[in-house]
Every structure is written in C-alpha cells, then in structure tokens.
Amino acid sequence: MKRLLVCLLVLTLAVPGFALAQGGTPVPAGVTGELLYIPFPVAIAVEGDLSDWADVPHYTVDKGPNLSGDPAENGSFTVALAASADTFYITMTMADRNIVAGQHGTNFWNENSLEFYLNLTGDFYAPVYTKGMYQVNINAADIGNTDPGALTLTGTNSDTLPLSGYVFKTDEGWGFEAEVPLAGLFEIAHGAEIGFQAQANGATQTDRDVKLIWSNADTGDTSWQDPTVFGRAIFYELGQTDVPQPSGPPADDESSGGFDWAGLPWGEIVRATWEGYKANYIFCGEQCGNNLGLVFDPNMGYQAVSEGVGYGLLMAVMMDDQATFDTVYDAAHDIMLDPATGLLNWRVDNTGAITGETSATDAEEDIAAALIFAQSRVDRGEWAQHAERPYGDSANALIDAIYTYEVADGRYLTPGDAWDGEGQEILNLSYFAPAWYRIFDDFQGTDRWQPVITYGYRSLFTTDGAPLGLAPDWSTSDGGPAYDYCDAHGRERSACLYEMTFDAIRVPWRIGLDCLWFDEARACQWSGRTAEFLKALPPDQFGRLYDMDGVPVVSYQNEMMDGMWLVASLASGDEELQQQLAQQLYTVTGNALTEGYWGGSAQYYFNQSLAWFGASLLSGDFQNLYSSAD
Image: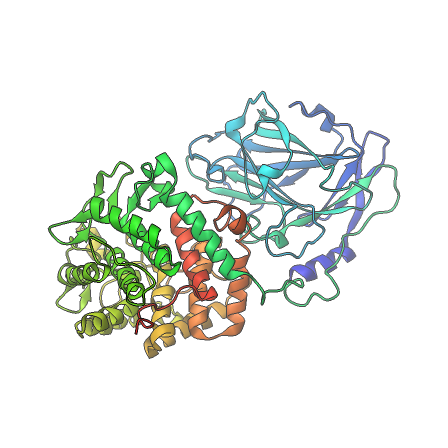
C-alpha cells in the first residue's frame, strides 16, 4: 500500500506553490502528508529568531493518532524546511499553553517534545534504521538554551548528527530552530530527495496524551522503528522552472524492498542484545547497586524484581554464560530469598533493601526451570557445579516450595504465596507455564503437575478471547473477569484488566513453548488460533495489544509485542506469518548490534526481555536444554 501511495503521488502532485521573497521564485506546495519541497539556497541565521523564515513555506499539522481537544493545548504544530548550498535548516513550533518538561528523565517522548526524521541514504524501502537515517527528538526542557551545540537530543542515531540550534518560547507555546551541516552526509542539489517525517508529542497534564504526525503513511506511530513510513522531501533550487518528482519503488521490489530476510544474523543479534542486557540492567555500576548482581529495572527507579531474576537466569543459561548466571543466582539467594518459604520476595531496591514482600509465581517458575537447565549443563560436562548450592538441589527445593505455597488444591495456580482466592477467584494466565511443569515432573520423577496443566488449559480455553487465541491479563479460574476479587481486596481495576496487555502478552511464549517442545495439542491449537487472528487483521491493527474481542487497546507496536507474537507464529507453523513477524521484529534492531538493545530506548527491561525470548527462539539459541541432558 505504501508503494502504491508513492506511485499515485507522482500523478497527483500539486504544482501551485508559495512565492519566496528571495528572488520571487515559486516553491511547489507538494502533497500534504506525503511530500515537501525544500527551497535552496536560502539565507537562514540560526540564532533563535524566526524573522528570516517569514517567506519560507510553513506547514501546519493537526492530525495524528491522539488529538487534543483544545487547539491552544498541543492542538497543532508547524514545520518549515530550507537549505543553503550545504546546510539543512528546520524550524518547528507548537501551540502549547501548559508546557510539561523535565518530568520524565530521558523519556522526552512522554512529555512536550518535537521530533523530525531524516533518511539521507536514498534507500526509502529499507525497513530498519541504518547509517544515514536519523530520529531527532528536541524537548521543551531545553527552552532558553544558550549553547546551540549542547541541545539534549534523543532518538536513533541522533548522537551522530552534527546538529545545533536553539529552543525557545513563543507567544502561543514553544519551538526550535536548528541547522544540520550535510557535508559528507548528503549533497544538496536540485531534485535531490530525502526521507522526511515530523511529529509532536504533547502532555496536557503529566504524561503524553497527544501525538501529531505529518506523514500519512505512519498510521501507527512507528517512525521510530520503521523508516519506510517517512514521507519525502525534495530540494528545490530557487530559479528553476521544472518540478522534480519523487522516485518510485525499485523495479525488482515485490514485498520487502529487496531486503534479504532469509539471511538475517539473528544469532549475532541475540548475542549482542544479551551483552547489552547485562550492561544495562545487571552490570550498570552505581545504578545497579554497584553491580549487586540482580536484574535492575530503570523504569522502576532501578529496583529489581524476582521476575527479572528469572529472565536473567534463563538468558544466561541459554547463552552458556555461567559467570553471569552465578552472579544473579548468588545475589538472588543472598538478597531476595525468604528462608521461611524458600521463595523470593518480589522486589528490592538497589541497596538490597526489600521493597516488595511475598512472592510472584512466574518468577519462581522461571528460576526453577533455569536451574534445571544449569544442572543439565553440569551433567553434560559443560559447566562446573556450583560449589555451595548445587543447581539441581536448589531446583528441587524451589519446585517443592512453588507447589506448596503457590498451587492451591493441587491444581490451581495462584499468583503468589500471599493471594487469597485459592487460585480460583483470581488467576494470571501469563504465569501458566505448562512446558516448565512437564520438565519439573520429569526432573523430580513425579506427576503432580499434571492437574495444574489440565486446569490451566481449562481456564485458558474458557476465557472470552479463547476463540481468537487471546488471553486476559487477569481472570478467574473459569475464564471470567476477576473484578469481584479486585473490588473486594482494594485492587484497582486498572491493575486487574480483562484485556491482553502487558501481562498476557507473555501467553504466546508460555503456550508456544509447550507446542514447540512437547507437541501438546492444546498448545498448538491455541497458537493456531492466535495466528489466524493476527493474519486477518488490517495493517494498522496488526501485532498490538487487544481486548477480548480483538480490538486494539494501543495504537503502537514495539519489540515486546513483536517478540511474543513471533513465538505464536513459530508454534503455529505458519511460515508466511513467521516471515511477517520476523520482519517486524527486525525493524527494531537498529540499535541492537551497536548499542545492545532493541527499539529506540533501553529504558524498559521488560520489553527487552520479551523481544530477546522471541528472537532467541528464532535463532535457535533458546532450547530445551533438559531434553538434551542424557
């Protein structure tokens, strides 16, 4: 569809334009949301005074996925472009009566900020960021800056762009003026074409609640990860009489812009993001408690949760990284263990102080599975046994504790050791890990986990989303909403959602493993339903988070969703869907090999974890190590 729009653009280009005072040369108007013309040479002095922009065409944007109800409060933004012989100029202003700035750390996208995007490569169909593609976020916290070379820039590759400028207040709000010398990056000439996008983030109170986007092709706010949704900008030399047209798609482009999806280096990406994971969440110095050894969450003030311990141990054992495995294992035992139950307290801060008592079942399950895998590496002679706490012994003790304190009536999985309801009044299906339970039974020589598997699948298949392969975050054991429990226990309904959001997005992974590793018919059926649901969606609804009717509840995609839906596609055996989701996941690898993280930010350890699990299954690095222990 995007290629078709470009082809149609050539036919529908509007020729009437603006008159520029310098020489009186008409500048074509372009096509709203698709094409802009950049007049050059124009004399612009970047000094925070917009008077020399008076005769340059300005474009107003008041559309996007999240609009403001008040024109004076993030209701629109303007953008204007110009150039000299070798420098690109841009100014953007925003109507903003209440400027929210400096409230979200480096997450400037979550408050008042203006963004522009450049693709200087000439390849407008590359689905991932490469050298020469830039996302530049300029934020309102820099208002009044006096050093034009010291703006606080964020966004993909923004640190490599030689940008300088000023951020200032206006009568209606705020804005910026900036210049980018293009020598060595791009040669300005009449008809030279670049990819371009402009966006505005607006926070009317605290968090972002307004998003405005210039490019018509970006219907899902995906420009930060997918440069194919940029529009175009063409340099127009003053005094010329012809109107340059945008280029069309390559002649050999059929479905992926000529991009070789078959030969992607998934193993290399998985290794690089594991190294980044360690650097960002385990060994990040003072923020990580001077490398205390746990998995710390930047988005939670660098606290550590037991869930992260499970993720870190699973990653380390799959990556054959015993040193990191033992570091996390030892720290969890020394800092988080509750000796009364043998389970872990669910949260501590980066001094090691407990900030969240009692357990979370999913964490213990993942930790126990990781310990079994570690023991399997010992049994094969790949690892040396832990000198103080043999992995297998710890796995046995932890599995017993899980069964004792986190399973009710021998069949109902509870969210943790301190929840009422006996596993029936409230259930988190993203904690249901049937592949792990089969391994637990085999490892211990029992069959006590079989009823937990039976009742877990029964709950899963009785939810309202079951026909579509969608599971809710929270439910009762009979598949209905758990609102009665939450109301009775003072739990906000927003933390008890009967939708598939940030908890249940893990269900495709949990259930997919049971299909991929054990060929469980119910798991494969579930994954097949999920695949059919995804395949039937229009592009602007694909691969998101949903309610139980399959209606998206967010307007964006990210690496977390990509990784988890990918597991469902692998378990379903649908190769076309696998390719589509692999392609989508690959679009967020722009920082993976160079910076060690997925997407545009390393802020969210949870997103990074789930993306890694999906990619590591794709690369073959995530394996059932226990089955290979013979």
